[in-house]
Length: 639
Image (cartoon, rainbow, N blue to C red; front, side, top):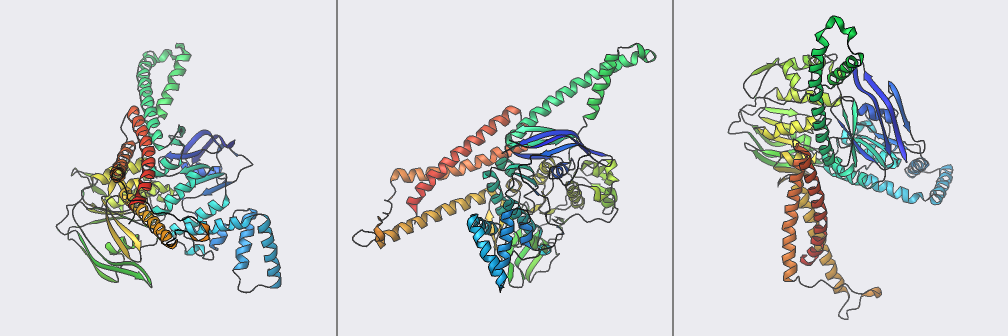
């Protein structure tokens, strides 16, 4: 069944053309990622489909039988009212009944009229089977950690607003879901929850995200917006990379042929300029047609990150017994860590546990309750914050950069002007004189990154740097940070980003405890899986032993049930197989990580991408079978 049809839509913002004559459709069950550079119109297109914006030309048609739900980049911003009203705002009978149910049960005293309403409501919920709906609603609140339905929306953080909006999205039970950067402001635990939920739903999905693991796991197709056009790629993110490489090679070859043909035709056109009327009209028309095609194929610039980092001294940063609390809420307790040259540290943990607080303590923007933070004399911080870019009303892009400096030193030792540096950051001369408030969210983040790098830091502290960046900019940022010679301290919900750039983690576990883990995020998740499997095996072993003991000497279980006999001692062959599987699983996870690195790095041939994609799929299937066998054997080794 066709869910959505977009026919020949065009949209401009002032003189800036976002896209022209875009046409596409969505069928039921399709889950498509919408990819493209910052500022190309992805959010605008989503808003059109959601009915919040209108095209200059063309038409958006949505099947009247379906429900649509839209999650914005920063939802519920500026809205007032209770959390419950935001979650249950979709006009559905279930939502209305549930809102009335919570309104009545929340009252301390019920009038006779309220008691009658409650009785009628109970009857309706019984007839409609809504007790199960209410149970699922409560479970959803628990999974998204939304404890207080009466809390005012204005008191929520960005991450809390996102979780409330996600709850509203799930309660809406929509047929078509539109998501704009759904992983922004979420912690890794919630991202994995959302990923699994969307992957297993039969909903039709159109989403904008820079999270490559999310795209790989959830989507079965990609739309790529480039130079005002839309390209469709069937398959997951790995398939998209392969198809994009092939398309660009073909287009590059076609453009080369067209330019060669134009050179010859131009000679012919100039040969007798006064006698142009006698020339072949068809040949002249063809010349201008090809000329327009080649000229419209703009050369897309590539983001160039460069900056002369200062050398680090012997003492870089020493943190001793650091403490920070807010009332009874302990965020950091006696945290000690000494940074050394080359440190590349990731910070992970659920929202609200103090990750950003630690960064603000390190940079001196917060005072600790106890302990010390000692910075080396030669250490220069570059702090990229989650908060939006600060600028004056009416300030242009170039003026905002010149406010810091007009000359930037590169790693080569050369100096360039602020205007030239902006060019490297994909801000062409015309856009440099635009007002900052006209930039898209991703363009503002890119400008914010520029302002951090021109200070020539040797210790980069980055709090969610991937938010709102397109995939091209993200890959360039990864390349730059990978080669950065100073220290790196990184908070990010982007799992691939963390895997590529850090070699150990600071894990916020709650109640002020910070654990130092040696390895990247995939290593950490694997360790949790192994720990969980061992714990399950131990509990199963304990349960079996308890059941056996409770049957008594006669061997007869109570309530007529047969007793569970404990497993026999593992054989030599089982012990050997268990060790082989443990080692093989570790190797397979490493191979998967390496293949994902290759798929995301770019620059390979179509054949190589195809081979890597097939290899990754085979590894995933093998790993799934091996994990089940490993779990079965692990029950024999429970202590």
